[in-house]
Amino acid sequence: MLQSRHGVDVSSDLARAADLAREGRAAEVRALADELDRGDVPVGLDDRVLLGTLLALAHANSQAFEAARAALDTVLPLLPAASPVRQARFHAVAAWAAHGLRDDETAMDQVVRALTLMEGSGVPGGEDLRAALGNCSLVLALLQLFPLAAETAERSIAVAVTHGLPTGWSEFQVGLVYFSWALRLDHLGLAEQGGERWSQARAHFGSALASSELSVLFRGWAMPWRGICCARLGDVEQGRRDVELARRLPVRPPNLAVQHTIDFAEGALLLAEGRIGEAEATLLSLWERLGTSAVSPFVEEIASLLGRAAAARGDGSGALRWYREMHVRYGRAQYGAWLARATAARLRIEQEALLRRTQELESDALSDSLTGVSNRRAFDANLPRLVAAAHSTGAPLTLAIIDVDRFKRVNDTFGHPAGDEVLRRIALILRGHSREADRCARYGGDELTLCLPVAAAEAAAALDRISRMIAEHPWSTVAAGLSVTVSVGLAELGPGGTAASLFWAADRSLLAAKHARPPVCEPAEPSPDGRHADGRQPDGRHPDGRHPDGLPAPVRADRG
Image (cartoon, rainbow, N blue to C red):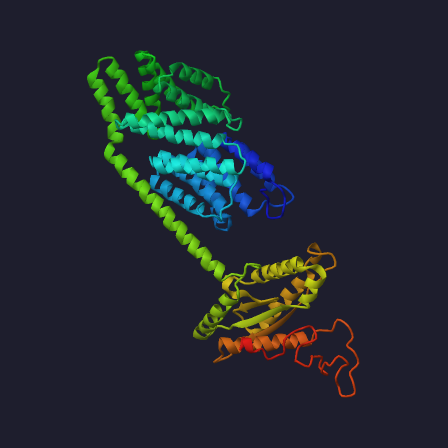
């Protein structure tokens, strides 16, 4: 379920925004986002990134690529804190916007980032993953990286099937990949290889059109494209029916890209029907309207069709001119270069995914899985470094050790899940008072540490505020009747002090604070020799030196 960080369910709103974005209805996406912003509870960061991405997608679907880039720039500062799959979806749309602005290098870079984020078993599935894969496949097809595009598009269908999602969008995207691939093979004189691609494209467009999920806008593209497939495969009658149906679709607002696609298919069908003059008139009008703005391989296909029309009229020089126009734009040498680039892109994705996984493993090894802060291993490595830095700069350094009072009783009374949540929330409060992640750690059990770059007096004031925040936290939301307090030990690094001596001093301070804590109940009367009836010593410790609450004796050799 898609939710804001405050727990408010916004899944239906986000699904509505996605539907509007696919239709290119940017104004309505923006209005929906504004409505959510005016709600009683703020939208979570992850969902805010998605809304910005969907607004950019809506602009891109209406061919307003500058507006798409501006929408992406608005949420770019939030991106590092978003989930990997939302980041992937952002980069996939950014790739499309970059391609629309004729910046193919940036488009390729954005696709690689998106695919890298989606590698590995830790990435959640669902609509975000499917959408990101589908958008990447379309951009890869437009960049002529067809094998990688087909692989990515087929993965999008697999994700949809695995998660019980409709497959209409994914089928459309796979159809477009194979359609573009078939065109390119034809242009290179490799028609024998293109036949299978035409059949694959026709089948996938058919599956997409059979799905109720496909929006009117995308039906306006899928129908004429399938019509072209039919014409290439000799089924002109079905192709004509597809184009006529596309003309009657209620695309709102009117979309020039859809109209150009219908005219493109009309020209191809007229030529297949032998209506040469009408085909040339339709295609020439489209060529003049598009100029050089159409994306490959569609612009080359118009030139190819005009060349075939000229040849059918016996105009050899005219046909040569159009074929030259097609090959000047794109030739076999370039195709080979693009295939090599596709191989390089796949290797880069694999390398960056491996690097990302290595970094995640390193982070896992130094992070506490329960609280998310640094663990004992990281603390032992970081404290000497912080001490050395303080000595070299002369800056103050104070170490605080925070211990949850009577934590065993929390677990025994309210259960270990409640105890775990207590530790998570205390760690979050401590982390909020540290600008650097490596200054807060869970040392072990119910003890956490905080290294502050201030003198002891200032640190004591800060920890006093933190202690009050913890005591006043609404713990009843964790368990009815739960209250939590902490004890704190502080020590400031002195001249010549070491990490070991600093920790020892803070540890002794914590034990003193624990001893000064008021008892929960009155202790038993001591015996004449000063010992309690249960054998405890006059200061309350057991014969083995343990504190009555189970704390170790003041001297803890394992920390020396």
